[in-house]
Length: 275
Length: 275
Image (tube, rainbow over all chains, first blue to last red):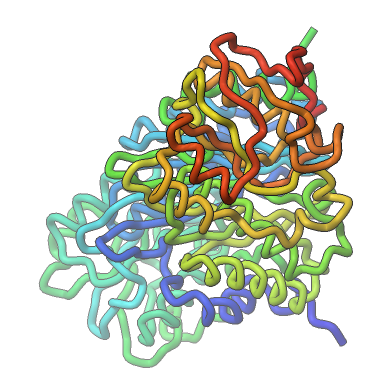
């Protein structure tokens, strides 16, 4: 039987094709010299609805990519935008979409420098690609047993509350962390805490012992809902004090490569785009 | 009445939003320091069919972007790939798509460094973003009255013949031109010669007098068909000798900002994605 994208899921797809992509495996590709390159599709019917205000669609499409730059401890610089538009779409909609894209870019010191547009019959899409920079990019692979685990804000319910359309990418927090705290590993929580912890397990070959009572948000949504766009990071115990004043400590890094919730292995339950 | 994307067309959209995008207006955005950034969507039902071999879809998606780098006289370096996939798509299809993407990238010294994938219900898409470099990027805006106009190869019929799926981006030709001939203006012919001449008219504020008998290809297709991906460029008369040995001279640059075919103004007839 032929296996489909649905059968192997997003994790399976990534595993299968990452072998061919040596610089992949983080929120951004890290280029020689510290360049960061990332792209992220936002699709009608999946990431926004046909009646979502276009300005919010634009904000979200840019902010998701800004969040990927934040997760590497970097600074965004330039963006290009690919649009798939239906011919019946009002020009006003496109203008408001660009307003949202520009608003998010400007707020974080990034400039939209170009793009291209093509015609779709069904689902419209926005693909933003961001070029950024980090002198010392923070990887997913740097977590060490004994590290303290933090998140920058509340998790869960982002789709229901509408936060997913107007969230603030954690660039300022990331900048502070990189300057003031030595962060070992970082990722943005885009597919749910459980999924993104699992990504750190695979990248760092360590495990996590998370205390459910410390997770800022209501379970099970705080573990499994997508689109939070908070940062999940680990720091050595000696540096945890500074992070504790600003962020939520949720657990610690262990040797065994597994995610434990209150000591019990957690079945992976994050959002899978193809499930 | 509300104006739609169809009403104002691709040219209108670009004119309307280019004002907000200061570095746009060429095949790639030119970054400080000579970086080139470009992205280009390839959409099922528009740029390829559901039964197009996936390897060819991948080749085309990469080659279109490589062609944009060629048009600036640049070298490609890094690529990221955004995919919109239906859950029912066979994994084999995705593997073959990547084979085509990697084949085109490798052949021209470019490396795929990352990407992201999401779920669509209807049309699948591939958006490649390329980062390249040019010490002295060739713009659309440099054509001067008296320049001789060239194209690198045959025009027209690329969709019918299947050339649009397996064309060779003119990176080698562009490199030779930049080294050996001083090129004033360049663009890749992606939407038909008539349309792309019009783009040079707008960017350079000059006109073109084209001789129909010299166009390499059958009219009217050679003027109006899209997806040729040959380069269209202008050089000063004193440098035209070298270019003449390799490429097709098709006319000359005039002062009046209009495209003439055998002395008669040409109605713009290129491919418009939203017409």
